[in-house]
Image (cartoon, rainbow, N blue to C red; front, side):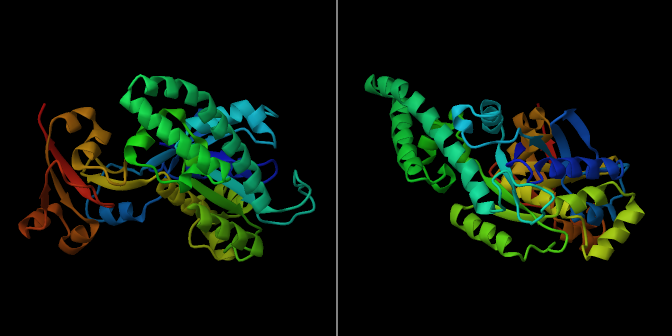
Length: 363
């Protein structure tokens, strides 16, 4: 699963991406970072439950869950018609699973805004309009073929035509597809189109150093817009976070204290992005490693086992599961078993956030 970082020029998009990647690289080896390409990176998702687990199960390695971020080329008005790097921008968005849009919520006369004035809602509208137009074009191109197949009695094509017509009507009302609820069969019939306004979105309000809690009215406007369109919001001062990320651990802690933060805002951004992607974590814990694994919300036990290895899913028998609270109460897995608190779950079990698991399988 991956998220694409988008935004207009001079809103702090690349500063945020660089801060995220630099922050992870500067942490201990327990929080790995690696660059895949110049504009892509793997970012760890900080999870305090890992330290709670390792207080009782001491491993050789600690491995947090991770997500992939893509720093997507900037957009300009007219991208849907190929202006600027529009085609490249749009093709990259189609490939990601969620969108992080950085919007500028600070005033700075030394940093020129591409539109001449700071207006985060106008920035959001500019990009959303381009995505709506591009989705409409995708659906318009797909409809004739779907209609031909539907006339021949193809059941999937019939579903596809119905879904396209509903989506087009929704887009024509200038609403993103993430606010449209389709029957599961229809949604599946058009899933291959990579419709961009259907992707979940997180608005990242880039704030001034004097407004780290995001109390400025510009941020309030972003929150109001997000509430109407089913999006999330997180605040960050990308400039400050970039400075913090370059410090060693001791100096970082001191600077965080000086500005009144308990942790870098980048940690919050990583967790909010994880949530926007529809992910939650389960854990495996032993002397070799304690590890957080990402799994979609609603995944079953076998599907979670498959995240570790396809053989685990194919030969799934059962899962032995307990929670972090159990470990803190009983101090060890042995005592959890003795107290009868180790749950045995089968193939129909729906994973819960924070499950600590042992999977039993046979292939």
